[in-house]
Image 1: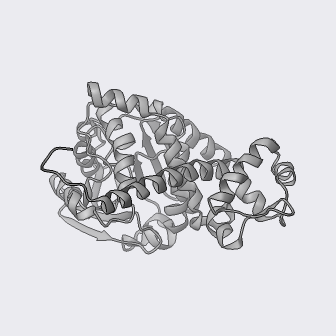
Image 2: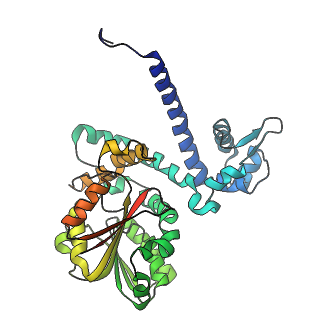
Length: 360
């Protein structure tokens, strides 16, 4: 402290309490991820009040670890404990937002982002000191996690809410058109559309070989002959995109972490047939930090940006737009890519994203 600065003890105390709360909530996030991945929440949802031994046996897990996890969940208020009987219960109100049976309401899925991002802390710290980025392959489970995320936000709403944002599209898909998903990840959306619309032809481009292999395996298992997946770096898509090849193009949360986001968008414009449409799902937010101060997920999204989307782009020699590139910059990039008509939609089920419909 210098002589001209006075300490507001009340403010300092409030901030200290916030930091303590942050540490506890971050710890619970790790435990929530474990509860989801191990199936403990799902197991407890179907059990009466049970001991740690009974819960471990039902879940097929080691009791000592389950017991310690239950302790963290009990003191954290996630599960209820009867100290006399030594039993634990997952309340129905918590079951409704922590289990796979809750479908799109399953908030436990998102807790996995914290340990996943923490796994590359050393890599990102090195980037702070030396520059550069962190390549996709360092994020061991990211495509798996994104596919699970997509399973909550995109897949359940795809036919009823997302595709109808383009008027007449469902009818065109039923008749038969050519569709591209750029940055398709594990291909969940494409494989679903390939099943629904057997007369249409679907193509997925994705940088990750692992994700493409997964998508192909799912397509083969489902017997989809109308979908193909290709491992492809989209950095130079502006020059390499097939001209006027597709009637409909999608990107789901895939533009901002590309090596060349504007190049990808220009390639999409080049690849669209006359009269075609491009639908982009991307993060809801502003391009200006001060306008995101009240954003419900602001700290999380900027953290995801710093720990994944930005370094992944920089690892490709890209501009590192970041997760929170925002609506203003997104619309500017769409226009620069050659799209003149841009509609921005918000869907009730998805507080995290905008849905842009772009036409030349």
